Structures are given as C-alpha cells and as structure tokens.
Image (cartoon, rainbow, N blue to C red; front, side, top):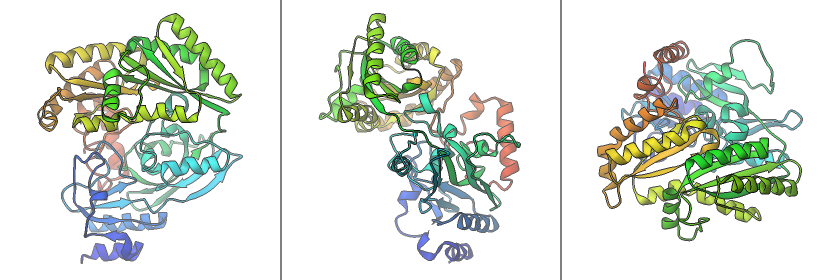
Length: 470
C-alpha cells in the first residue's frame, strides 16, 4: 500500500478511500464515452478534510479531479487513464448549513443534491430557481463549478447569478471562507466569480451561499405550435412584452426532436403531433394569482395568433398537465439516446441571430452530409440551443459518430463563431472542448486564463487538462 493511500485513509477514514473493486461510478463519464482509471477515490466529510487531502496529494505529486454528481457532459470530472489521479468526491458533504429567511439566503455544502436544495428552500417557504434535467443527481458544487444553466435562466440567470458567496479549498490546501450573504461588497476583486465556472481547475468549491426568492403565487405552462424559428423568436418578443419578469421558461423544440419522443415513448402525447414544425413551451410565474397569470397568458396567445407567430396553443389546466408537458421536453435527450449515438452541441447565439444560424447551418449540413437528421431544441429564451446531429436513417450510428464527429463539430462551431456565439453555453469545456478553444477564443483571453491558472495552481494539480491547457 502506498504512503499516500495510508495518509488519505488516516484523514477521511478507511471506508472513504477506495482503490479496488468496481469504481465505474466515479471513473466513467455520464455519457459513457470515456472510462478512466483513478489512483484512488477519496470521499472527505468536511472542508478541513478536503484541505488535508489536497495537501497530501500535492506533496505526493498526484493531481486531483474534483467530482460532484458526475453528471457533466464534457468529460470534466472523470480521471484520465494514467491511474495516477485522485478523484475527490464531495458527495458526503451534503448538509444545509443555514437558511436565513429574512436575508433570502441559504448556505449549503457542495455535495448537496440540487433537488435537495430546492426542497430545503421550499420547506422554508422560499424558492431556489435553478432547475435542470439532472437535478435529482447533480450537486450544487458541480452546478457552480460549471456555471450550470437550465430552464429558468431567462428569468433568474445561470448558477453564477444565484450565488452570493463561496467556501473554497485552494490548490495549496488553504481554505478561503467567502460565505457572505451580502449583495453589495465592493472591497476588491470578485474572487467568487473566479471559481464559479472554473470546473475545478482553480479551486475546490466546498460550500456556497445561495440566493432564495419568495415563491410565485401561481405558475402556468403553455405549449404553442409555431411555423418556424423566426416565428418562435417573434413569440419570445411578445412574451417579454406581455409577461415581463413573469416569463420564467421559453423552450423551443423542433419537430424531429419531438417525433423521437413520440416514437420511443409512445405513452406520451405530443401536442399538435406532426402538424407543427416547432413547438414552444412557455412558463409564466405570477406573484398575484392564478387568475391573473391565466389572463396574462390568454392575452399573450391572442396577440400571438393575431400576429401569426403561432398557429395553435394549449394552456395546462393543472399541475399534472404542466408536468406532462415539461416531461415531453425533458425526454428529448433520452429519446435521442434510444435512436442511437449522436453528435451533441451545446451552443449559444444571440437570440436575434438564431433564425439565420439555424437556416444556414441546417442547409450546410444537409449539403455536406446528405440525410443527417437535426435534433434542434433548447432554451431559446436565453439563446442556448442543443443543436444535435443524428446519423441518417438506417445508418450505423457508432460508425457515424466515429467517422464524422470531428468534421461536423468543425462545421457547426465555425457557424457559431460566424454568428458571434459560443461553442459552450451551459455544459462547460471539460476535456472534450479544450482543444477547440484556441480556434474560437481570443489569444488575449486564453493568455489571461493561463495566467490565472498558473497563479492559483502553479503545480497544475487541480483538474489538469481541463478548460485551458498550459
């Protein structure tokens, strides 16, 4: 047994250091694309233990891969194949440390499951708005490390906008306690924003102070049939005008994406079937009453029908119907997986330019790779699309992924760049996109990022090879 393993067991207890057996839950990424080999999986139970683990690994010359729920989609939290990286799992650190209802804040540990954060806020009569498909598995530390987005960004912003303070263990094993509930603090550089979105490359987030909100009095969901992406953008403008801050969700889904749900989950009834090229899912959260929210929706949909940007619409009559509509949207990735391996793109483009981007990129891919099928859906309200490419009908999807992924990524990313967008909207960079950044990020930005990495982690011990290469 190595001296490092002995030291780690002394820090966190023998049961919380794993070196043998099936470690697939920590060594394999969420999409099952990559399987690494960990030197050890270590599960500390406190911030002090995290700090000691980091110090021990640094002294022994082993790099560290911080890990939350391991639900990331860009291979950013799994070890490489060297067998020398220590996976630092924050799963045991799941406590809600404090809820301050008067200050509308909650302090939680990094391993707290997102759904548990939502439920703790609800039990205090408050509301935490971050919501995404993996909320039953992902952790708040991972959400902040990747600056997660989700379905309510149009109203509340990304994870960054929902966090006031952090507790972080540095690459030297020191603890920065920045768990402030202040909304105003102009005393220097905003260290919090350095660590949010860094994907564990600059420090290990161990706890966070989060913003809470009063819960809405009513939340209503509607589904609209729209003829094109251009019409969906026009509907979004009308929704902003009629609903204001009440617009909390605006999801667009292409007919092929919805058709996959209907094909693979036959128990689901997709509104309007194949009669509409696109569907839009809207959510209106109102602080007055359900009657007021419903009247707002009715006025919006009347205006949209008059404008011609929708051809039909339905408003959920109750919570069960609303959940059914959202379940259709959330089932698209699962239906896509049932259809076969595919090439995924998590991109953002200014909302005003999304129609032209889709029109031109659709035509480009159809011309370059005849028969490819486009699974286009996502958070149109904030300009984030999951613009995915499925193999032609009947083709070998594994061979298609192997032979065409690099080419298709280049075509799509070049288009994203041409339309002033980003090749990663909410999933992060991880290791999948780290080699792409020099093509689409300015040299000045990359130099600044490398300078930060060298300053905060000079030994390159935290998640090396992710986000930015030195």
